[in-house]
Length: 176
Image (cartoon, helix red, strand yellow):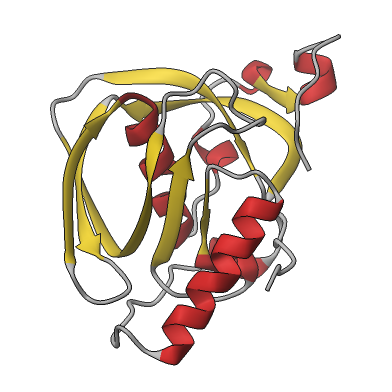
């Protein structure tokens, strides 16, 4: 079921989410379906459970052909529960980000270029990947939601944060 996406300012988005303690339950599968329906309805690259008002450590992400990210490399569809991230090296890169919880805006955010992430899928199977590029950026963005962090909190220079129409005049930015 498509759920309303909480917007920046809602206190749920600033809380640290609780770990998932039971896998492969009807409730967890229902939450996953709600996340998937909501993400797809908004053409998101990912979504975290707190964005739909559920303070649990669960994110989904995946990018194929997406109008919000027309030039992005593909990212495999992933369910990631109770994640941990480990940077591989210290190299960081700044890049534009948007968020379903901060509609109509973009900002330049520094992220690690390569990282290893671990966690579990909805069945409790281990997930362990080392990734780079856009995939690494998406994982970092989504898992920040589980720590109560929204991307504007990571913008270093507020001249690189604003409304799409002002930052990219004349460009059609698909956003809700």
